[in-house]
Image 1: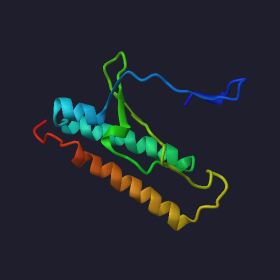
Image 2: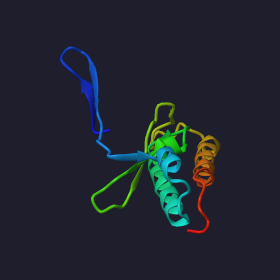
Image 3: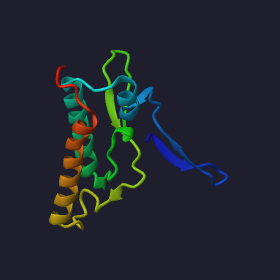
Length: 128
């Protein structure tokens, strides 16, 4: 998100980044299995995004190929954007300390395991 607010009428608005590209589910449906190189690259990008979200006290809770958007850039390198935080869980903020360590560890582990299963869902082409 770039900005949120309300118009003078009280109507809320959200300004989001425009992302040309496709989600991973579309890419798999249209193009078949990913190469090992691409799959690992994408999962590493997802893990980095999750680490940032977790540091801000946000747990995504709905990782799946349709929620991983591969944004096309001019240099032909895809940048993975984790999207659809609609059912995310906001834990205690990064500095409030209200979330217990075991709860945070469980949520972090669940996200990491889910990121790993994305490799399986990506139907990686082991020949590439």
